[in-house]
Image (cartoon, helix red, strand yellow):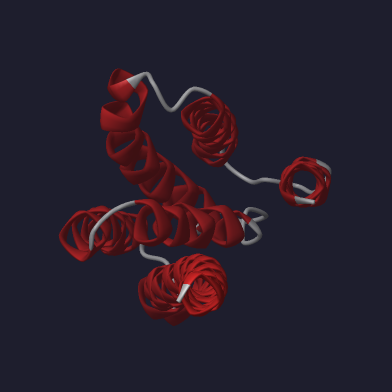
Amino acid sequence: MSSSLNRVTWTAIAMIFIAIGVSTFSLPYGPTRNLIDMIDASVVGLFTLALLIAVQRLPSRPLLRRMLPFALAASAVTCGWAALTQSGAPFVVLAAMATSAAAYNFGLTTACVVTGVGVFAVDVGGLAYRVDTWGLLGVPLLMILGLLFGRLLLGFRLQAEQSAALLANADELRMEQSRAATLDERNRIAREIHDVLAHSLG
């Protein structure tokens, strides 16, 4: 069940990447700088996705997990910049996914640093490129919403793990009670046999 759910999740993420690529690169992108920003965002986003998959598949490799926050921050920055371009608005989804993944996989401090770096870079880029209010406020807001969504998912995961642990403890307790009841019954039968034998001998 878990592996099939993971397959569905990664398939959905791959479809999002394809949809963003089709919807952005097929439209007029304006200055060459815009195309470079979108290509950078696509490459960094794909690298980050591959790293996320590797971290999940190879949990015994701590180096991969240590690289992940830097990749997520780079993805938030590059995808945020791409979202400021003429046709790159859909890249904001990838920027929000980066902050959400940081919030889900790491502590609050690391997630806030990743999100803060992305928000700061987008605002600096937006001021430098003289983008509209959507670029200066909307893109950072969606990245912050990604952070909150990731923390919410993490809370659900922790709650599910705690529930599973409680169920396992309850099952273990029931088995212990069953064993104790069986031992009590054996002791009672042994006492009765002892009493009968003692009475017969007496």
